[in-house]
Length: 398
Image (cartoon, rainbow, N blue to C red; front, side):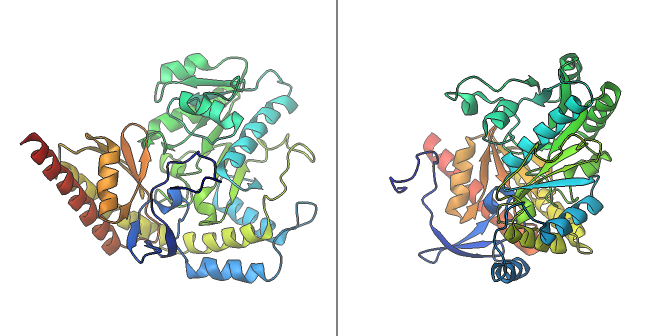
C-alpha cells in the first residue's frame, strides 16, 4: 500500500525498484524485470546510461540552478542542436510535456494576436488525444474522465473525431488559430495518424492562415525510428512540443517553433523558473549525443522490425487474446480481445513491464537502446503470458 501521506491519485503496482541498468529493473528483493514501459517513454536510453550519468554528475559539481535571469550556455547549445536537427528556429525549455504544450498553445494564440487577429484563439484538437494534466491541456485533450470536477472547461478548444477530415474542415472558423495533433496517440491507444492526413493538415493550415502544432512528447526523440514521427510524412509543423525522451529520465521539455510562429513571444510574455536549468541542459545534450550519432536511429528501426514482426506472429498464434498490433518504431501497442489489464498482469507475472492505454491497448515502449536479442526475450515473455491466459480460459470453460 502507498504511504497515506501521499495523494491518492495513482493506482500503483506493488513493485519497489531499487536500481536499473539498460532495459532491466531490479526490485528491493532482487527480482529483475524487463522494462518495456521505460517510465512511459521517458527513459529513452534505458536506466543508468553511462553517458547520461557522467553528464549529470559532471554538471552537479558545477551549477544546478540559475533561473533565466542569466545566459545559460547549455541552453544555447541544446537549442542550436535542436534547431539544426529540425524545422525550428526558436526553442523554449520547460520541465515537462504539459508545460511544453502550454507554451505551444500560448505561442499560437500570441502569433494570431500580434498579426491583428485577437479573435483567433480557438485550437482544433482530436478525440482520444492526451496533451497533459493542466487546466488548458485537459481541455485540449477533451476526455471527460480528466475534466470532471475541475470547474468550467478552459475555453477555446474545438474537438473533432479522430481521422475525420470532413468534421475537421467544418470546425475551421474565423476564430481558429491552430490545429493541434499527436502524430501517434499514445494514451489514446497507440493510434497512428496516417501520412496522408498529416499532409492534409499541413495544407489546410497553409490555406487558412492557421498554425500546425504537433504534440511529439511521446513520439519524439527517436521513438519511431526517425528523430520525430512527423518526418515519416515529409511535413514540418509550425510549433512542436517535446519532452519525455529528450531528458532520458531527467525532467525536461521544450517548445520548438519557426521564427514566424514565435514572433509574438517577446520578453515578458512567457517564463519559467526551473525550465532550462543547467542540470537538465547537460542531460539533454547528452541524450542528443547518443540519438544523433551515426547509425543510432537505423539500429532503432532494425530492432523495431524484429519486435513488430514477432508481435504480428503472436497475434496470429493467439487470436483469442490479441486483436491488433499498432504503432511505429518502438512505440507499439497490443490491442487485446481480453481486458488489457489481464494480459498486462500476465506479462508482469513474466517479469515484463508495459503501459496500459485507451481502446483496450497495452503500450510497449522499450528503451531505444534495446537490442534485437532483448526484443526477442521480451517477445518470449509476452508469448508465455498469452499462453497462461489461454490455459486459464480453457480451465474456466471446462
